[in-house]
Image (cartoon, rainbow over all chains, first blue to last red; front, side, top):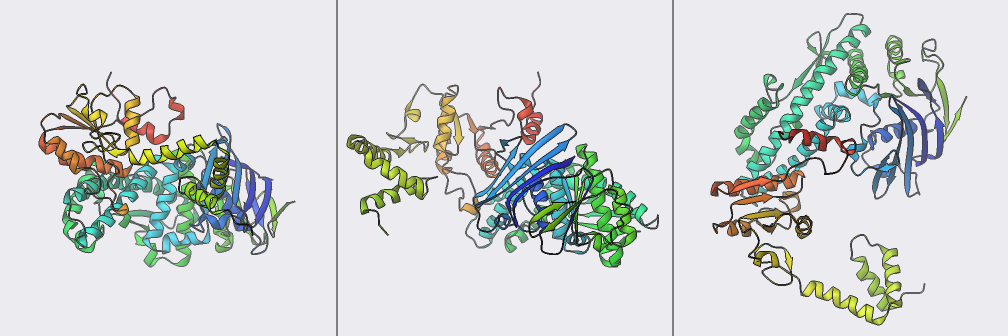
Length: 371
Length: 199
């Protein structure tokens, strides 16, 4: 799929934008603080209904105005699809084919994007929470069932933590209610861990291949899903339920004493290994970058496998972070396959012989001009 | 700046207490009210007071009613062996509209949600259990909403009642009647397939 047209109204520093993109590579070129990333972000928001940079949607509305509007025409194999997202101080409204969508979960997934920003290097280096968020965002886009299980899991987890706190402070004593929400948590939790395991294995398959090519067959990349649920129980929802059941029974007393949930997918992690060594602890900066790149590129193929179409790739200031060999590999992989938007301050460093006929958008103080 | 005379300001304030009504709408409604016939305004005010004064909660099922116990609870022609449990009084109206259920009701006035401070004592569960101690009830249908909290409440009630040997059932999830599969969202479809029935 690709984004054909984009219209913005009162989005960040853009008052009015009406532009058409190339189905291949689009470059947003300009000095710092002119709005390159804002423009890229608007495409991300159109797909995900939220920004990767802030959790506060009000920041996306141009200062002094009431609402921001992002209007896009996405071309899929089945035809073109108009999407519209309105962000106001009251909340957001999403339209597909000009029809209001009552639930955002019905909107998300219509337009798939993959974003690679310098912060993404943190999925290898950073805290487990960042990896979980990465998994949840990406898999949620690909599977409505995963999104549903995860959203319900999180809602029940919140209630349960609150209730455990009440039990701890002796403001409540009903054990039956605790049993009931624990049972619910186990059912959704089992679905979440099994889906994560399955997605990670599929992604590993693609990432391994890409990583091999980038490192000229020197390195084998593997993923290990770290869950409290034993690996052998991760292939089947019933088995995962039984394993979680046992864990919850074991920790019940401690959970009440500490007033919080101690078991479940909210404590999971993923470990990336190169030739069986943990990249987070033992990898060089360069290796960590390559792994992040392989994982992101694998997502493109995984998305194609699961949804039947390639997503749109957004690269925020990433080229400057990569050396020439990795840049070349990245651009070779995506060229003529995936519509790509990239931001950069100059085209000098970019392997120009590789990018053929990019469409260049010059960005200056919220104004866009094309060559 | 010119101030509104006190009676209008008071009226605007009152209208603003209604859900979905802000400053502008309240002002428009207030000025419209001034232009209305005095009879209509009096009737309006009487209706407001009557709705509050003459309506009670049924001491048996918790539904809103003019007389206590309510019409449904006192109707001996209704099936006394089934109780349908709902979250809100308006859910009773929806169920009655289908004109196909002839049992009794029980209104919880909420669902279990520790975050909102609603525990089992805060919703109408105790009175439900009390009703079940009379031997007439054979089945309890739990019709809470299909939200995580609605689901937890349904399970909680089921766990409480089952030991007494009363049948507990839950509403089905699935496609709405007369609708195209094409327009159903993914989760509804998944639930509909899960809950499929043999033909």
